Length: 232
Length: 332
Image (tube, rainbow over all chains, first blue to last red; front, top):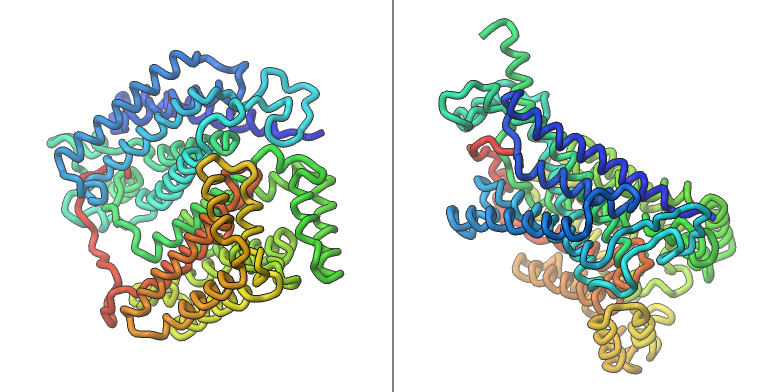
């Protein structure tokens, strides 16, 4: 009988790639003199490796206790950063075009909370042994999801919607970084391409592969939504 | 600067973005449609969808065949048999298609092909997955998702098709097909819903009660309580409710031809009706009970209604300013 345990392995493999890439970004950003979101990339790294452990328990490297501490701290960090932006720019900064970072802080804070939610509800997704598994719907012998009735399906569904919306929103924004733009656009708004450290060179103010960073976020949103769907 | 200036500028632009522009109303609706497709794709990955037999995906399809004319029923059971024999492969393909549709609509470079494919896919799913929405055997009542939730995906793909004149349209749906055709589409859609509200078993005294009470199983406590209370409230007033729903749909259908304030009221009423259907009679597409693959017609009707929200009339001018906002370089 077919069963979707291979799907868990597939998502786990994708998360490992995402995690490895985010680690590389953290390590190489400074030597390459590129700017990157260190907190977000660290968050992606930790979340991806935790999700690998949830999807395939035999590959787990983060215990539940450690995970809860890590993601609790992460949630607090991002929410504090979001509060700081709102304090500085006002509540209208939620929709203000000049405070794009606020949305990043909020969504990553929410993702950290989702990780906590999954820990509390008793993930992992897959049983340790998938040999001879029999498919048969939710709770099949090869799929050890959270305890029956765990969590609130309404809240889980809402979180799925948040993740899906974030993935779509970020993908829409990816066109900003298309390399086919005319050099003339670089002058729109006056010097917007070098808004980093005054006196720094253009290379030093360059963001590091923003489209790949967005791609990592999208992959994480889809994987996380899949895991939540299993919990509904 | 050296002779490689233009190349370095290009590479620089790849990493340093143009100013961020908030998506306009039409683009926001496209993104909402993309999100629903992505949701459908993720829901398709539930474990039971990969299993053969009556409790799997093929079983769902087989259930939609009953009541349809012979040829249609035969084609649906034929498709169900193929899926039953290859549940993993077929369901993986279906999930992947829906996920890619969602991502394609969200990525502007792939918007048109994604919308085009979504129309074809929606029509195929309407036939083989929803049994033509039960329209041909009187089961297409709007409270149950009739005339087929997936039809609205196709309709929205057409109404939200990118167009040069979209920026000056009086409402988002008029951007691709024009105001007259847009009005006609709205009127026909809601008139059809009005008709289906009274067609066949939909007007039976216990119709609404049976639908609501039947949703109870497997729902979270708060929703099950809502279902019980709603079922008790409607009791055997199904005919009255069917007439009320039909009248509301008819009013909504006509509202689009009225002055802007009345048209706006019509859109608001449409959103309320759609949300009431989604929550009370569709129970969020039964997603919370587990085992659903889409949110049903409610959110799509909401999206459709929002595509008809009258926008501020500025003849000849773009609906939203296109000037960029100078912002510090940030990854959004």
